[in-house]
Length: 238
Image (cartoon, rainbow, N blue to C red):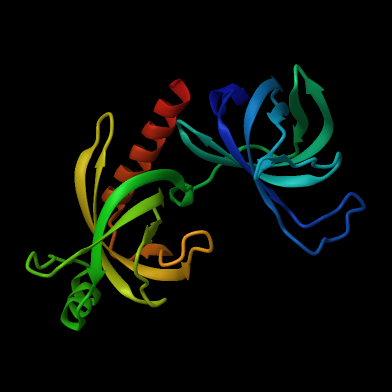
């Protein structure tokens, strides 16, 4: 039964697969976020019409998507096609048919969880970079000053944070933050590689960074993923 894997209220991500209703490849790929509204059968569900920047995204009947379901049991993927759309009690609904079986998606760590977490970090020194390259381990020097920032989303693969300074893309930085959840209370000291850095348009002098973990082990990654799903589950209960 499909309900063994997904439930009403689960978040999902819809990625266009680059084909229009005539079956031709389209020029742009889009990603939308939504939630399961109802499960009608093992191959048909209803989802909320996606909203982007406060506006409904009126997706078209017959469009096809790659769907990722974020559940308590992990991330599941399948392909789907929109077969109908309607409004009920001022809620806009899409009816979709699942055109492939659900499969466990192993890269669930890349789901980004929105948050606001304090973090401290600094650039690695050359000798520290050599140690990380050789052993994968880093013991930060407590005497070196750290900069404060705010993590705005986190995953098992990396973080996005905002601060009043900017690192160069490709830089390796030491990231220190604390996760406190229902059954999580741990400080993480990880090395990250800056993939992107840009100034925020609506907040001059503040910079957003996207960082990928470099030396994380699988135990730490699973702990972070577990924390994310615990927080998602707590938020749904609220």
